[in-house]
Length: 200
Image (cartoon, rainbow, N blue to C red; front, side, top):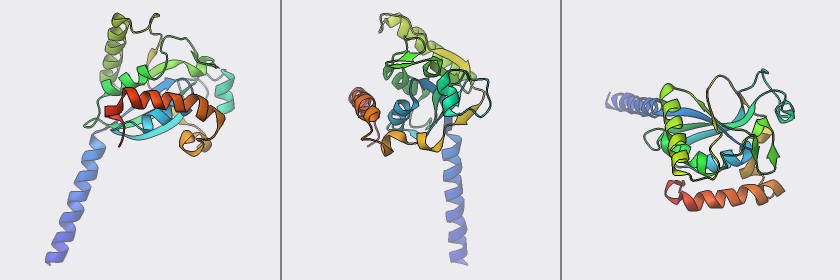
């Protein structure tokens, strides 16, 4: 009888723990250029539990990578970030977002040009929208960049996961040219500037 009671108690505690973790999880969807770069950065951010590359903000259902890259589907390359709000705030996530890409260039990040590479925040709640707009206002007032921020703040609608070969791209293709010459320098800068927020 004691064994059965102990098993039931253990199962109950495990279920409560899983439920509490799930309750504290939130999602934000972010576009800041090539999703390979953005995914690699947020995968290393403490408090983030999942990062998925995909497409958001377009008119075509179930778009392919080729359709998005053509610029005709209207989608942006994005990452959907799931995070534990007890471990990291949305403010901190957006601070990383703004300081790891150039939010002042319209439809462009470096050599990647097109509306699919636009800087955009797709908010999942009114509170997220308020936080995003407040931070943009503060950053513009601080004049961190010469030009004003052009990042769009739009209501989240539909997220389409990118093809499987785009998921976890940097971690599985570290020797690929784009990874070595574009992503690695971004990661090094991120890990230096946000050393206190990087996963150990």
